[in-house]
Structure formats: structure tokens, C-alpha cells
Length: 366
Image (cartoon, rainbow, N blue to C red; front, top):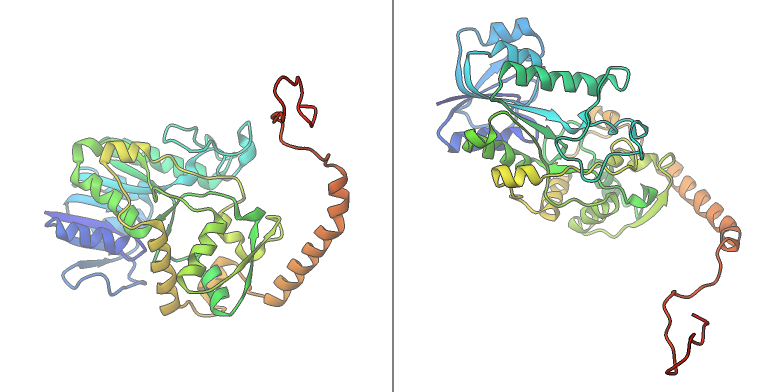
């Protein structure tokens, strides 16, 4: 059995590739060749070309066909069209930003995504609403039109080794640098679906194992259990044996960890019920262990300071500015506290607790 994995060297790639090998597939990976990783065994064929353009796709795959294609990279609409009639099964990877309200919470009333978001929730409907999300919706439509029995997964933010934009590094580096305070947006209360690479790859492999159940279906995927931003920071700190104080700042001011919020403080929580019921999905790695593995990997493989990864994260790691911002904000909160307290009436909980039988009202007139 021949399988083509488009991509294969990102976070989920090694788990997908090796999972397919364990199932008896002869695996080829189609990628540009700019990110080779040790986790891909030597018996895996590398097809080095650009999977973003029809002409390079056609040239690279000329005369080839496959029992299975897993397209997790490149331009899906071109890949889907190029592989019509050349594969028995097409499994595609998209993203959860197709949902209306992901980028523009005000597009929904009330504002923000429903919690949780099921696969049949409204999608972005036009380019004017959000161009990038609309292109993703169009791509989904193109894939399912070209391959009616395809399976499409809406990936969340995927964490683990080899992430191009590892948001956890914003926390890990600060802890390595001895930071004892970390700012979190809006108390760090936002919930956004994340998926550990091995867990998300498991969803793909379950679809491979169950072709009839997966045919023609679109699935959300991610970890079954989700942590808030604050819990994520605390979990990473514990994994690295560090203590940290979380300082709540308004989202507009929490630049140092804004990347963790993934677009704002509205919840972006995916409903995984279809995946669990339809394919029997369960997390392979619990979220606390997954985050610990991720944090330790970046300790052992730190991105270059000030380099490309940190530039993509948009994080200056300017600790002097962070400290001044936190100090001035907290001082201002204390200045305003008396004014806030004037707006609050002294009260007790509303239920009566009579001290004598037969009284109409208790000692607090309740």
C-alpha cells in the first residue's frame, strides 16, 4: 500500500508518517525540503518540490498514484484537483478559523463563537467578512467537490516539537530567563482549543483505520481537555520546576503573552463530540504531560534569540518594559480601588438563616 503525506515534517508529521508505516504503508512525503527532521525514518521517500502550485505538483507527482493521500501542507485545492482519480482516499487538513466569529467576534449576536463550536456552526460566507477565512472555506468546498468521500479535519493550534510558531516559547523563555511574573491577558481566562501533535495525528490515523465512518465527513479535532491561558502558563512552569506569579492585564496591554490568546479573549472551544462518537477518539497523551513534553523539548531545542521564530511570534522579550507596564497598571488599579468600592453595597448571601423557630424574617431581615 502506498501513502503520500504532503508535509510530514511539522508537529503532526512524524506521528502520521510513523503511524502509517506501522499500518503497513510505504510512505512518501512531499515537501519543499527546507525542514528535514530526525524523526522521519530513512525508508521514507522524500519528494522535494513545492506543493503550493499546480505546475510543481503535477511535475513532482507525474505518473504516481497512491492508495492514500494525507494532505497536511500546501494548497489543498490544487492538491485535491491534481489527485482526482489517482488516490483511493484523500484526507485533508484545514483549520478551525473557518467558523464565523473566530476572527470577527462581532459578526455574531451575541458576540463571539458559540461554546463549544460544532462542525455545523455557521462558516464565514464572503471575502468581505474575512478574506483568509473565506479562502479556507472555499478550499474545503473544493476538496469535498473533487473527492466526495474525502475526510477533512479542522485543526486547532497544534503544539509540540517542530512548531513553526511555538507560542509556548513565550512562556518557556521567560522562565529560563528567571522571570517570576508573567502577564496574562484578561486574567488568562480564555479557552482556545489546542491539540498536542500526537493527539491530533491520532485523529488522522483513526480516519485511516475507519474508511467508511470517515468518508465524506468533516471533523473538529484537538485535545479532549483544554486549559485556560493561565492554566497553560502554570502547567509549563510546574513542568520546568519554576514558580511564577500571573499578572492580569487587559488584552490590549498583555503583549508579552498575547500570542497565547490566538486572536483575542473570546473563547474558541471546539466541540469534539462527532470525533469521539464517529471515530472513537480519545487523547493519547494527557494535556499536562503533553505540555510538559513540549516545554522540555523547547528547553533542549531553543529557538535562536531574536531569530526568525521569535520574529514570527512578535515577542520582543523586553522585560524592562513589561515590568514597568505591570507596575504602573497595578498601581493604577490600587488608586481606583476606593472608587470601585463605592459602587458596591455591603450585603450577605440572600438565603434566610433563622435563629429561632416561627420567625417571619431572620436576624438580618431576610
